[in-house]
Length: 290
Ligand code: GUN
Image 1 (cartoon, rainbow, N blue to C red):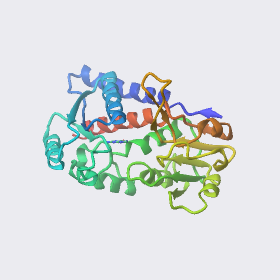
Image 2: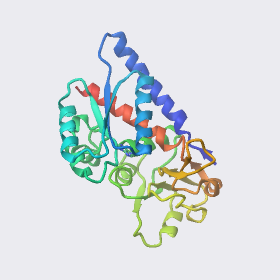
Image 3: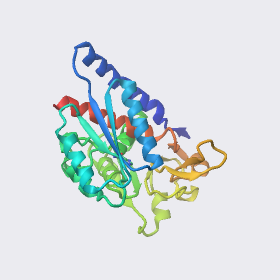
């Protein structure tokens, strides 16, 4: 079993981007600027945004965090998005999801200018991805593709089961894995909570990508010997033995699954850092396009 080290891979990507930022600075040019909107007090979201800002600082991007109250109305958030769409100084921005229940997530995604949508969530960018046209690829699926690429994992002709069908992970993941590209060219099945014979289906996967949002859902009996297992899940569960009071648990029962795998990611240092690296790549692209 080999652990897929997202921390090391993302570090490489950050260094590559930092080198480009240094060239911009040396030429006296402006540097890329990413903004993140954080609505409410969700602890995990606050942490994700803090890490995204830290990444920007490390590689020399400018960053701005816009914090909005838990009770922010949809109208107020849409007005802020409009402001960011028009802000000449900002190359790209994200609205950290989920947003509080009084706000319609789809309206948020539709309001973001596609040229600044560095999450790659809006219809134009998703459509471009489906057509194989240049676009901002959704950060988590693209991060996973980078991880597969940098470890030179063969995907062509393999059976890839994507567990989960969300707009931001499962669905774009399936499209990228089935595209005529490297990595790609896999035969993909999207599975979800209503899939029949889920255990058998997962056991037929050469590559199993899990984004179902249920802790330790994938057990050893669902994994084929030698499979590549990518765990996107990250749920905070209370843990009094930790200073933070919680620990992150993935969608895969790592301890019992790991020895069956050729490659596997761990809940920390796996997909998360790669997602953040993709966001930086997209922000640089947004800057370069202007
Ligand atoms: N929430 C969980 N993942 C993401 C992501 O990639 N982007 C945004 N904006 N919110 C998220």
